[in-house]
Length: 423
Image 1: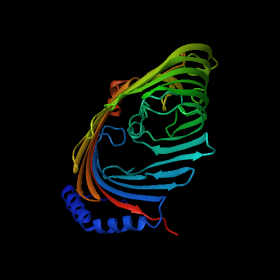
Image 2 (image 1 turned 90 degrees about the horizontal axis):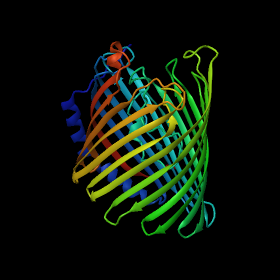
Image 3 (image 1 turned 60 degrees about the vertical axis):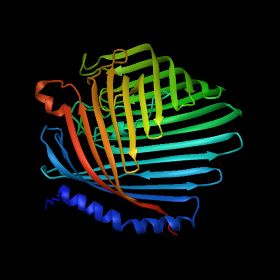
């Protein structure tokens, strides 16, 4: 039985208005109950939306879909730190295709513990399973002063925008406060990318790092970071060891402007099999000396306006394209709150992959845009309108429908507010 559910947009808007007004009393009651359990925070949110995708399964054929987005956030504050869990499953149902059900899953944790007066431990983890090409770029942070394998670009595999993949990663950082404005850090990172399309590259990497940071004056700090990162890639088989030494500089003005810079050499040892490219028994063994650099510039224009521009070049995971690559990426974000009921944001990104030494790279550059507007229609109810665009130059004209992607979505969100933890 193929169940089809379609919600007309006028009905969705009327439903949003009705639930938003009638449900505000329940949310206010739950916020009052929160006062009995300080330090424990539950946040619940539900989204229901209707959208259209012009290349829903990577064939160039468009289709309408219904989307459900529940979100659960738990935070436990304690004397020495906090523990946070964020769950964001998403269920998308298309109308025009036999493979209509799709579940996108995302989970993340953030932990901070003060071990002693001078020692603090950070633990962070992320899990993502999706076939949404924008899932990676939505959570992208600014230019990193470390050479960890964080996915900044979307899933740029050449089979098209709807290729499923799974990403799992975690970081741990130990901070030691030498003096009031001087700190040492020691940490490790793990990253795994698994592609569910035969023939694409799976990547696993882990890294170890140590750093020094000092505030030289108010609003200015400098840092030095060393990291060793180890890539293990399949199809074709690659082993890459990269050593990175970076110098960073951060400067923040009083008027809300901030710039963060990092640059330094990257030295890589390559060992790879080029089977299927130069011959079944050929391989690559090579030393490569390059560099990593990046910058993030952000401005709080006013309390209602925010602008950020970032760019970086470093060795990273190829996200299904191949193994370790030199990734150049740029991203621009601008958000504005017009009033207490309406806000909007626009953004765009560009990414380019270059071969690391003689390693093969099968993907060209890509770029895209993401836009969103939010309308607050009641204290705990909102409607969001989203539009995403993704473009990747086609490898051949016959595959052109795979490399352009437009998606529009209107979604109603209801927040249940802050709830107490159940006994």
